[in-house]
Length: 485
Image (cartoon, rainbow, N blue to C red; front, side, top):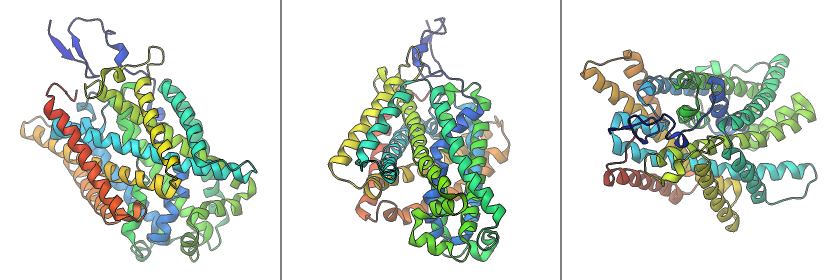
């Protein structure tokens, strides 16, 4: 009997019952908003307003920083035009590597599959350092014993492992609640600041060309763009979406627009809260205190306590989102015969990638134990080193995906099979590609700073990503039976 390949990449004998390989299919009821919750939670909106935003104000272009968020939003929206145009031609949940493979070939696709996996895994592990320190500081402020950050990180891992074992719908519900709470408190702060007018009236710096290009706008663009990492994971949840051909494109654009508007407005409000004349000085002196200071002044002690709690839950939501992404990468690659086939089996009851999720948890556990044993600082070392890997890797993936979109539709056009407009196939992704290349240049230029000021570690990040790509491409070359779909 003739064999065929189903959407999971499994060989299926023609005429077999439809559920023969149901143990290798994920199930879920994710709609547009379900995927939006998972993806926006990965972006950690409250964490961005409390972290990269003050850094962008301090070392970037000061009061002109909100305009940089507008530019970044335009770049990622242009990328998304081509990304979603290619979605109907990618019938599986491989996300980046499947898209790249469609345009640049199977071997290149698998090389970038490994880059994607290590990039998301590195960021997931790194954020455990942030939540460990955040939880330690939070509970200590309420008079609780000063427990080591590693204990809080390990406790978080247990909760994430339980949720990752279950159906994605449970994670969606948890993420939805946490996301609504963190966004709500920031929007309340935005509204109060806008209503009261801040210390010096509403900020207008983002409207002034001289302010926008002042200082170091390139550094500002870097911090702004890093705040969007995670949006591109919409396609990872293809098998758990109700109608992926409609849901994924809609969720991608909704997530991007929500994130872009939220970051722009909230950054403007934070600047207004302090005043144009003193916000840069304050951000340079104490970047981590910019958001708490504004919150306490405009929302009182109660608002400050809420923000402190939600900052930690925001990091938890970020970890859970990336855990789900990593587990699905492992699951999909296992069903492509890259990893052991057992990791590509779905749970009989939950239809979740439970074994892939478990492997992810074990890897995280190993890194946490190593970080604790070596006495690494949870933020300046554990987080920044791993975040450097993720930053470079994901931007390179975005660039490769843009190139793949252009290559795929160029072949279609030559064959007379053009199905989409020139705007979606070439113009938008082409302009987006130029912007992404500029961002990558800025990342390389400032990579030592991103990884704690260490040039050797910066070089190590690049070497690691090249080695990982070579490993994935090498497997594809040696095993021609390994297919993308």
